[in-house]
Image 1 (cartoon, one colour):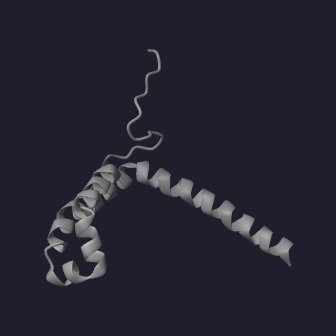
Image 2 (tube, helix red, strand yellow):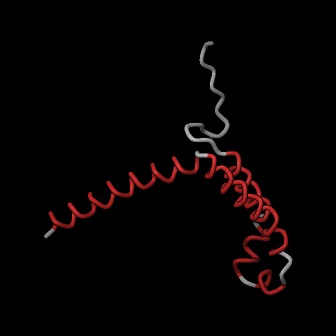
Image 3 (cartoon, rainbow, N blue to C red):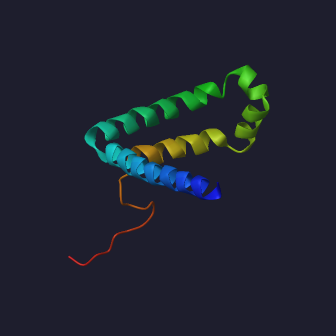
Length: 98
């Protein structure tokens, strides 16, 4: 029984790994870049507007976002999504000799 569960988990992990690679390849394509730009623009525009909704600000999640400066963090996350390139790590300078 445990062997079959392990085999299924391994199969799921293998399929998920290939799916992640496929998603990353798509996000690195021209269509994926457009999608990332649209998503980032939507987040950047909508978060400050959503934080002005009185019902959201009174909710525990809204208060946590407001206290933590969450709107700024979401905008920064959106900028990272927009500017992401496959194979690059944020803040790392590639210094290979020419």
